[in-house]
Image (cartoon, rainbow over all chains, first blue to last red; front, side, top):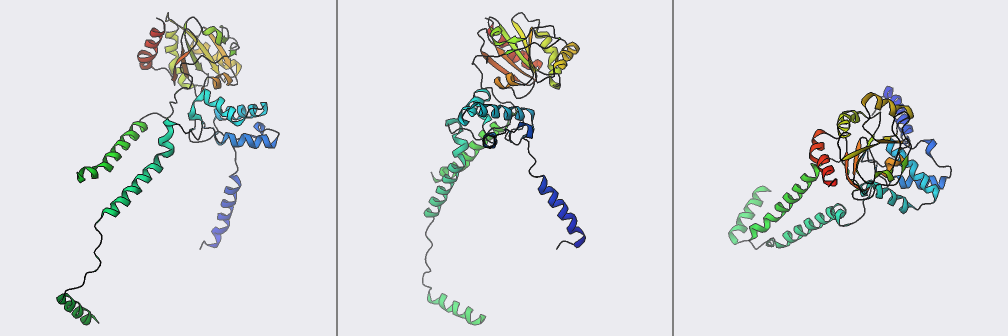
Length: 158
Length: 177
């Protein structure tokens, strides 16, 4: 149990940490006035990789390029482009690496299907190996000598 | 025969491990350009104030081999490649154009006055939109553009003496034939 003097401090730390979680990379000045369009922009931004901090999407990244791309996406949404058109616009300039989820094409098959394929092969190998193993002999009857030895042991034990 | 079958998983593991090792040895910050062999995207940028050279437009990039160098006054590695650019400015086969990327108006000129101006023309890309059209994600970056205005090579990061000798100069020579 947590001692009484520390409980208050722990509570303060917990509350302030939780309150700071919603800190966003998207500045209020960037946001669109139409909430539906802004929501669309946020969702779309999560599909776009920040080329500078490459494990983040541009919705999370604080890099200047991410801010530029967020602004660009909002402009194109306001101009009426579809989501597919906007992503295609970016892919034409930055390549497929700008998508957080690369398209499924021969060059990315190992990425998308590799782990599942390896799991399937390994499972298959296990099943085949288990089937091939010599079947365990059901307990054969004991010979009379073994019966006697067994009875002796059991009676000595009890 | 059975023995060989038992070797298969090991061989498969070694093959996959070798493939991953090759991939892991690559530099993830070097993203290949999507614009290789495509025409230079069309844009026209105003001149950098007080730089002494005009602005640049994509239409100007025909008839000669061009190096389009994306730089900024706030970019530290740009300073290390600048002497190489000043040398390249004297190469007979190539013209140097600059794009001053996301620089406040006076800073570009100040940078050039301090370090020298190798460019025949410089476009001021203050909002970075021309950079986005070029797929720029960091500075410096340099594009080698052929006589028809097609991008043939993109150098990510500063041009080092080694890349100059091994990649850039041979490419310029080849495109100038």
